[in-house]
Image 1 (spheres, rainbow, N blue to C red):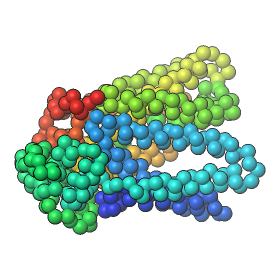
Image 2: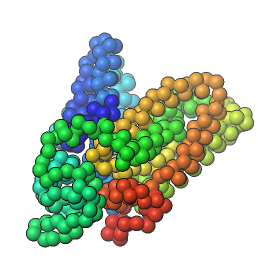
Image 3: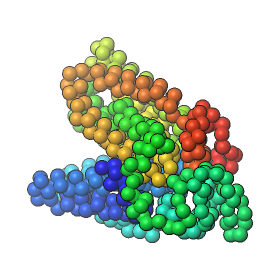
Image 4: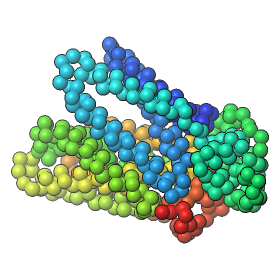
Length: 441
C-alpha cells in the first residue's frame, strides 16, 4: 500500500490527498453505520483502514513541509495530541451509547465518525498546497508567492526557490526575490528540476522507486526501521489488551474495563499536552534515548514482579505496583517515543520521497502492529512475564542501535538536513551545525 499512498500525495498535493482520504474514511464509516450483514460491516472496516492509512502519514508530511524549523516538532506532534483526544472522546461516546437498547448503540458512533470525517474534508478543501510540493512539480513562482503569503521568504526558508531555475549540480547560485539579490542555500532539497512546470505524473511515476535510490535509500531504511521498531516496545498491544493486562493483576472485569479505557485515555491526553508543547525543547535523539530507557525499565520491572511470583490476584502490594508501573510505562512512551515518531520520519526525507517513504514506514509500523497483536494472546496465555521481558529486550536493543545511527533534526531546516545526508556529514556533528539562534526558540 505504500506506493499508492505516497503516489496520491505526490500526484494531487498534500491537502487534496488528505481530503480524498478523509472522504474514503467517511464512506467506510457510513457503510458500517448502515450495515445489515457482517460482510457489509467488514467491507466498511476495510475502507476505513484505507482512508485512515492515507490520512495519517500525509497530514504529518503536509505539516512538516509548512512548519518553521523552530516549531516543527510542536506542530507535527499536535497530530498525536488530537489523536489521543479523539480516542478519549470515542471512549465516552461508546460508554454512553452502550446503554441504548437497539442497534443504534453501535450504529451511532459510526454515524458520528462519518459526519465528522466529511466535515473535516470540507475544512481541508480551501487549504493551500505545500510550497515544497509546488517546487517539486516545477511550479516555482506559485511556490514563491505562497511562501510570501505565509509570511516566509523562500530563501529564508531554505527551499532554494526564487522563481528561477535550480542548479542541477547543487552549486551555489544567486536568486532574486522581488528584485533583491540574495544567495540561496547551496543544496536545494528537491530533485533537480527545470524552471518550467512539469506534469505531475512525472513526479509520481517513479516516486516509489526513488526511495531506494543510492542517495536516499539509507534514509528510507532508517525511517522504516524507526517506525517499525516503535511497535516492538509493545505499547499498542498492551493498550489493545488492557482489560486482560489489568485482569492479570486481580482486578474485577468491571474495574479492569474502566482502567483500560477511561482512566488510561485520560492519562494519555493529560501527559500528551505538555509533551506536545515542549516537543522542540529537547532533541529527537534525547526523546528516543530517554524514552527507550524509561520504557524498558518499566517493562523489565513488571516482568520481574510476575516472574518472581510476587503478584497475587487477591492480595499484596505487588499487584498495585504493577498497575502503577503500567501507567508509568504508558506515560513514558507518550512523552517521548510518541512525540519523535510523528516528526522524525518526515524530517529526514527530501520532498521527492517524503510522502512515499513516510507511507512506507507507516506501513511497516502497522504491519508489525498487526503481527504483534495477533500473537500476543499466546504469550499472555502461557506466561505472565514473558511478553514484558520480550518487549523490554527489544526496546533496549533498538535504543542502543538508534544511538549510533540516528542523526539529530531538531530546529534544522529540511534543506540543511538533506544536504548533510548528501555529503555524509557524521551525525555526531549535526547537533552543532546550522542550528542558529533564530531557528531554535
